[in-house]
Length: 373
Image (cartoon, rainbow, N blue to C red; front, side):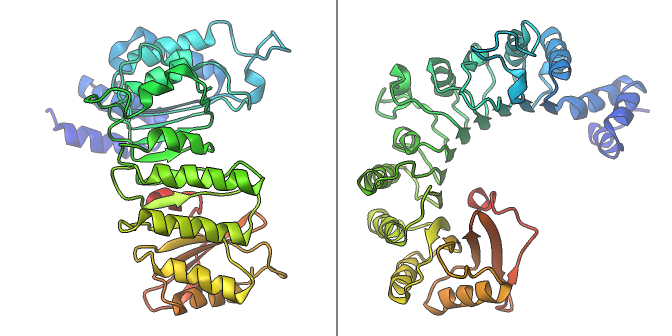
């Protein structure tokens, strides 16, 4: 007796391991179809031999490759060749095999590529001739013509995380919203994560960006303010109000934090929809702190903020100290209900409960809050 597709899928979902699913696939063709969907829906490739085996299978069998929806490919630093060491640990033809497999994954929606080499390896060519339309793409590939060409064809991409950027890449113009009037390049892009503010300058205009994570890379005050001007000007050109902005800095200074917040409030008015913001220095000086709170009051939707408190002596890292500062923030009219305290790179989350109490929440990853709002 044949069961419905939902029943087969439910049975497969309750299998204890991938080995059990493989065994179930041998029971019947109906179980095989459901088992293969579960086995190949999400793939993680880390070990070179395992990667080669899976990529070989996907390259040879388009039917199986079409089942892959989410794929992560990663290597460690010792697996990638360098100019000083012409003898890579990866087998000859490894990346060509990856390229052939990617060309077969026509229904891929989530792709992550982590090389972990620190040198922006020029491997973006593995994305040539791929037909899939991604929703989310994370990579540390070098920003070059191949990567830009790939991104230009991703009409459904909403979440982009890139580790590299080169403003001198000639075909960056193909990603500019003004490059070809009437065309739609990256029309759904809503979330961008990159350490280079120049990426925001390139991608924000004309697109519905709502969530951005970037950082200030300069050290001289004049250069940092130039970066701030670029960032704020770019945010104003997004077609939707910004909801989340995560902008860490290499060196935190209270006066610059106040300048950032003041520029944002003035530039984004009247569409102040920010729900997540930070990190900002929480000033030790009471008058500066009141100015910060006053700016927060002008952000009626702000409910999560990250505050840097390393300059305090001693840092307010005890539970009671953090509760006290969170209550102080609310006392001056802010609607914030979640505070991330950052002290010497250590993050602690304090939340306001329904009853009005502030508690330390250790179950939430502070690195994900900025894109969860």
